[in-house]
Length: 315
Image (cartoon, one colour):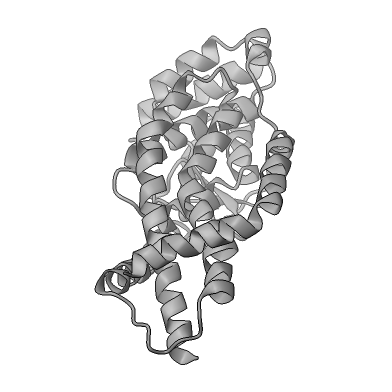
């Protein structure tokens, strides 16, 4: 039984890593077609994120739903059948891939925690009526202008320089921008990206980051006055504060193309904004039900086909 279980694990990991690499390669090539989609920035950010995590999610689901059951039900309990060198090699690659993702997540969290701890030396709470549960005022010279930190308990860090530089309306709308990142769980999404490691995904992640900033701008702005105040805050901070790279697991206010964001805000129109397609989560329910129905009706033959594929892999 032990050899049977080990062989099943090796075959499952082999199928997982092959499917993950195949889907990741397809995503790395095909994601650019979404740029021409006439959708809102919030919808486009959600689609880019879904496409980025699709290889991992699909590989895990297919492996658990088809490969593992097909092996358990259709593979004879024989201890004489061995596993070839290729499945063993690929299963080791799968374990290394998972380990690499875990190490990247731990490293990112550790580095971010150290930087944030240094920023918060001498910090104190700041009460601002912007719908943000916790705003911390930073007094250090290295403090960033405005940044969202944390995953489980996110909070906004704002420097004393930023509070002194921006008007109350500008500060309010800038905090609403960071609140939009908080509601979208953008820091958590960045952490997921660190786990889903695969070469060639940097451009997709960068595109998502740019769109996420525009989506946060849209979520913060509800009229032309808001757009002007947010653009003014960006211009003031970009002129007087050096734009530096923030840790991976934070959402900085001065991120993305500042000039493009300012131009877009100054050209803000509610009518134009409303003409773009907004993709809702429930839009995925009808196709999801169709897929589940097809899987239910063809599950038996699909398991047999999966078993044939896995048998071919171990030879």
